[in-house]
Length: 117
Image (cartoon, rainbow, N blue to C red; front, side):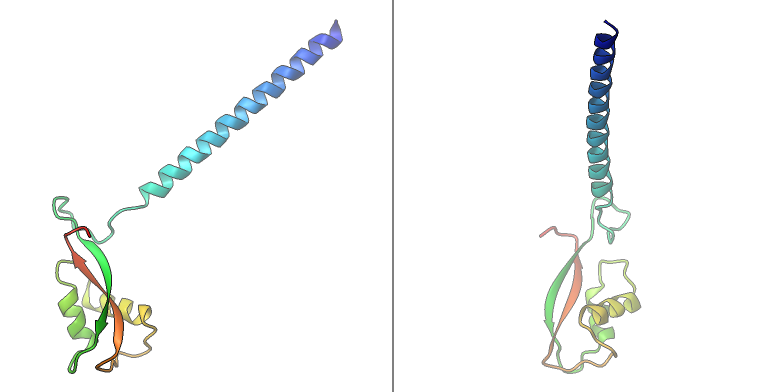
């Protein structure tokens, strides 16, 4: 009889461990989902929640007389991004070492809009 009680206790402990493992697994999954989606937000949005700002990328053909500053001034409208930050991003995205650009070449630039596309 003593053996059967031990056997029953062991079964209960095993069942308890399985439930605990399942609960921890579900909790970990839920926390992972929460942390993943809580980090997704429009980082360029202004404080006005009625008109969020969305960031998009496009290919841009450099025109004669264009500079990174003139492009930045044109494409940072509707955003809180500074001209210098924009230029640094364009240089990084296009592997540019200097501010020198050549007309007729294409670069990838970002632009901002309050329309979701």
